[in-house]
Image (cartoon, rainbow, N blue to C red; front, side, top):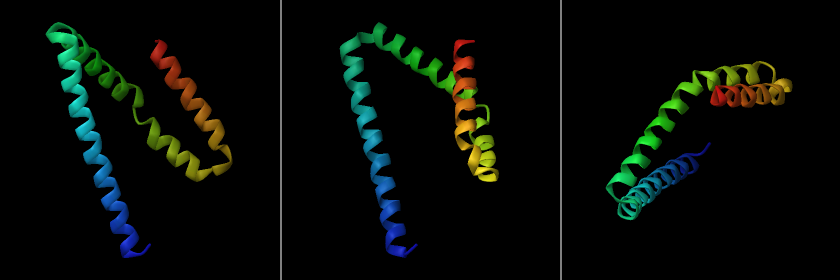
Length: 93
């Protein structure tokens, strides 16, 4: 990879990160204004719970699947199906 390509990719990632932050900030302002204090509090609580559940559901599954896929590329579809089913079962539970 050339230095120019590397720097371009770093700049693109930085721009995307900054744009995401700006959009999220504007979204929070719009939601807070539109929902009111009680509605926004409920939204913030739901968002916090969803983030916590997402963290708990991951439980290191991503690195395991990545390692298994690298060891046996022919079984990638099988592993992805198992991960989707496992996460779906954990969401329901």
